[in-house]
Image (cartoon, rainbow, N blue to C red; front, side, top):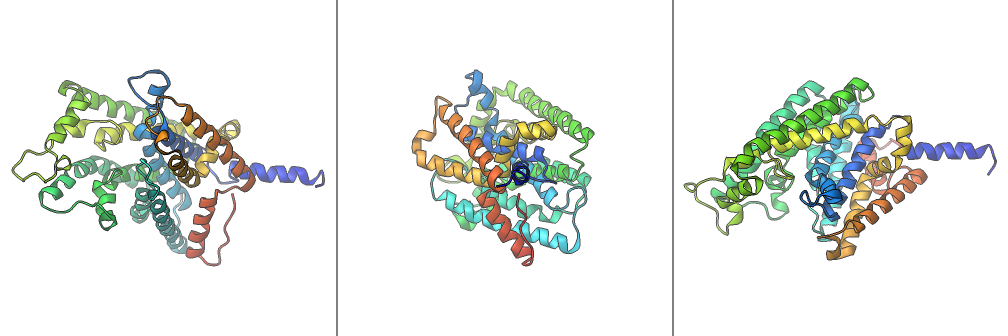
Length: 394
């Protein structure tokens, strides 16, 4: 190798590590934090009552997957034109690519599910969100924000009561792939009637000028305010009722989900007090506002990563850029670890998993750019949408 060639080679790998021109580092960082947060939720020792690191890591429960969904919406906006949505043939090709990605995600999560880990896999729901978002790719940020707010208001009520209504009507709730639509929509662990609020909010954010300081400040301040309101209102309502556990217990008393046979129409219905909870995966309006606001604030902070930040945070951004590969690899690792991966009383395994992931993701992105699964999905999606297209690396 000549001396003159060395700087060019170094520059090329630096571009691969940083994602090249047009890549929004802050979005990759936010996605990386979401993935690492899910690591903490899956294998970390987390407890709000334990104090110290365990209490700090407890923040990841529920919120990391919400941040993941929010960033999914931002990514959809970026791949469909950013501030200026694509139209005509470009819009058709974008929608085709998104559909192909969704199908491939479903295939991948089907394989990961065979491993039988305790992780409640989000990728299948993630695929459904992509498909459900397709009609809104041309919408303005204002219309998307209104729709997200409407979903946040109505969705929790539907997710809470519709499965109970179906059970009392003598209808069969999903227990296999034949009921995937109902599961994705209302009865699953990440019901779209609620979680689309995060995706649509992310889509609206992605249509803004993410490089503008005022936009970033608005995201941080607005997200923080929403978090205070969501959690504050929940605490004010639930506290006098005996706390969240008391409300959850009361809701379970008249829920068919906890009985071998569905309840009758004349029986009392689960208490509406549940809808004021704001805990992880409660899928209530206070959680959507509180945890959704938290995710928006985190995204806003990540977008402040500048010239120095993109280098300092390059390992986290690498995890975000390789999120599909990293998430899938995590499931394989947990499968190999077996039961030892769960119910931890120490964060040693989490630390090892995080450090190895940061190192491997950084090295891979520096050497090759896209992750292996990301490259595979991008290649198939682009060639399906446009057989003559070439796949850009990075």
